[in-house]
Amino acid sequence: MSKYILALDQGTTSSRAILFDRDQNIIGVEQKEFNQIYPREGWVEQDPMEIFSSQYSVMMELLAKEDISPKDIAAIGIANQRETTIIWDKISGRPIYNAIVWQCRRTSGIVDDLVKDRELENHIRKNTGLIPDAYFSGTKIKWILDNVEGARERARNGELLFGTVDSWLIWKLCGENAARLHATDYSNASRTMIFDIHKLCWDERLLSALDIPREMLPQVYPSGHVYGTVNIQGAEIPIAGAAGDQQAALFGQCCFEKGELKNTYGTGCFLLMNTGYEPCESKNGLISTITAGLGGREKVQYALEGSVFVAGAVIQWLRDEMRFFDETKDSEYFAQKAEDTGGVYLVPAFTGLGAPYWDMHARGCIVGLTRGTKRQHIIRAAQESIAYQSMDLVRAMEKDLGTRISGLKVDGGASSNNFIMQFQADIINSPIHRPVIRETTALGAAYLAGLSTGFWKDLNEVKSKWQCEMTFSPAMEEERRAKLIAGWHKALGRSRDWAE
Ligand code: ADP
Image 1 (cartoon, rainbow, N blue to C red):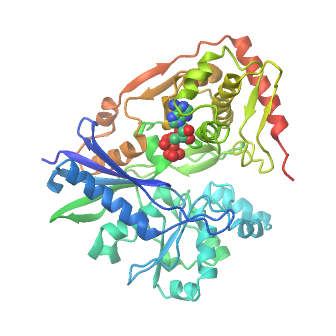
Image 2: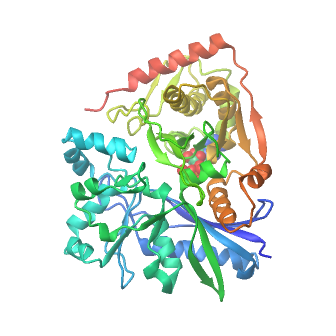
């Protein structure tokens, strides 16, 4: 009987491979960073071959280092950076252009043109669940087809394939069978801005608006699905799960039921709430997306999603640019050295504000400074800003859902900071639950692969093994909370509509 599940976590800056046993223990981790390419201001690319080779090599290194026989691996699950767009030649397997990364803003103009047609804008919001933006894959596909000579014609002739990173990895990993394995999952498809999240099919009207030939698009399957097999040293290992990283994390946090939610505290924050079998159309600046789910069910589940652009990154900024401390983890010590921020607020709107404000012209500010302001006040204010921004997302979700949340599961690098977690619990007035395994993205991919191959029996089994490491209970008086939140919103007002 196979003993392990292998999760491939293909992130924006690194590729990781993580091995889990049946009790969800991490047996080993390998990680490799790869190059980011910035050809111009605001443009971000990656080399698809390097994405693949880094992912493949960490997988092989992990097996070699841990001395694991491929025969002991029951299945592979993939979690990937979302929206990043790759187009490759079906015969040669070579990409025709670099991967255009989700952060890349080069297609803003295409989006501006699209939304001139108000009716089309509404169509995008309604059918894809998204707010039209260059972030999503659709306009990136159009850009490559418009700018690589002969590409559209070749795509029409069925010579080219489009994929997000999951599709690319599945196609590459499955080698010889590749022609049959041009596939993606619902959670990744729902980030392309050309996928109808209600009817679960590519949206003809958007394909035509962006002039994207239908022939180049992958087949879409549930996230938990046997996509194909990878031959490793003679063993055929099924790829049995694929999902976008944030949806994989929601799944890895066992948020299987409507109303359950998680917040990931990384460079930015990603808050996702399971909204059940019907998409919830946000009135508060959030987007709707398809969650990672298992096959066999007739209906997919949906989530509301909101993101904060700058979260953990403000701590990096204090460390690297302000030189307030040497090590990230020291930020917690300094925050706790101060009783409060002395009335200081820091709004890290370095690149504008994301949900629920969507103010591209906002810029960062530090307000409330006095002669008595000390370094630790600013350090504390920066950490509090991560919690305040997340609170604004939680409240927007609650408004959309019409109910209060009863708790929040957390993960990501900055979730290890106890000060931020306690302040988060205090400020949203709900308990925060931090799991033992914070590699929730990889764990979610592992769950999908393990559940769809019978390695784990059902959702109850994986849930029963999910362990909470620490709960942070709210302990702040209502009056203080209200005062602090009012101050935050006043500070936020100062940051808005700043850049010309
Ligand atoms: P990503 O996946 O976006 O690269 P990670 O989940 O690896 O992010 O988390 C890294 C981020 O978390 C960094 O921005 C870092 O500043 C922040 N971070 C890590 N540890 C701490 C800590 N103890 N306190 C505050 N922020 C932290």
